[in-house]
Every structure is written in structure tokens, then in C-alpha cells.
Image 1 (spheres, rainbow, N blue to C red):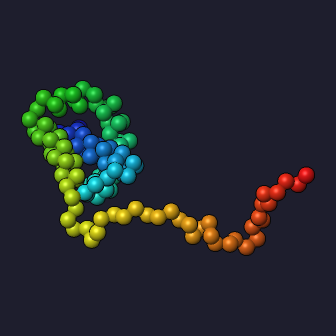
Image 2: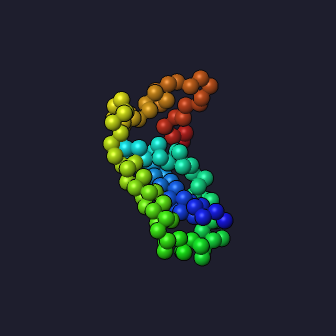
Length: 118
């Protein structure tokens, strides 16, 4: 196993997992989405398997300075992703409900009567 792999996996998993949950609930701000997209959703499944298969080396990484530094870097990147994105053109506006679909007649579609047949 490579020396730098476990801390890198921990750092990317933390960033992808937190930003993914924020995006799911539409609570993402700043560059959360950009960070999440670059790390990749597949990392979540890979990290789970990696941790299970390498439990002892995983816990040993928290006792050494270099792996701690790499993990701290991931935490810093996650915190940075919450900074306002000054390069965007405009803030996100909520989308209005799609009323166009309901008001457009559909040819060949049966209209259900509200009157009773009795």
C-alpha cells in the first residue's frame, strides 16, 4: 500500500460526503458543488471498502504527523468551499413552479368528468 493513500482517501471522502449531503438538501453554498464534482461521487463507495479492508493502517495514520497534515488539508478545503463564490454572475434564484405543463392541452388525452355516472 502506498504511504499517502489512506490520508488522501480520508480527505476526499470527508469533502465529497459533506458536500453531497448539502447538495441533496439544496443547502450548498460557495464552491460546495465544484469541490464535490471534482472529487467524485464514486469516492464514497470506494472509501467505505478501503476503510473496512485496512482498519489497522487506517487507525495508525492518526498518530503520524504527515497523514494528519493531509487530513487537515482536506478539512481546510471543505471549510474553504463555504466561502462566497465571487466569480458567479448572480445569486441563485428559486425556480417558479412549472405551470406550463399543466396549462398545455395534450391531444388525444381523455378528460375525466367530475360528475357521477349514477
